[in-house]
Length: 123
Image 1 (tube, rainbow, N blue to C red):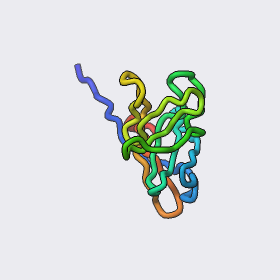
Image 2: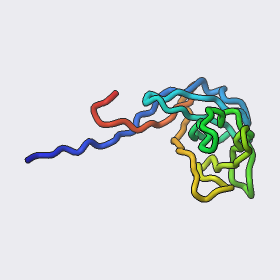
Image 3: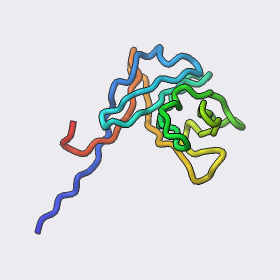
């Protein structure tokens, strides 16, 4: 019996023009697999992408959250219940058992791109 293992690959997709989001603003993105991501730019112009779905309420609101920092750690506070998450790691700074998925982000010319994992052979 021969078995094949499907390896996930990383694909960079265009997310938005490079001028979006503005400093300390968020942009909601619909990913090819149907999930939502929230893309942020911090004051030092670093880009971060995390889940847009608030794990406590199920609402798609993280992109409307409050960007800040806690002891130098870039953060996003959910606009619903004000839970705070690390933009770098996605982990909750209020509850050690909760986290948001994070995605790599880069700027390519006039476009911001996000890396998504796909199954090999799938667009």
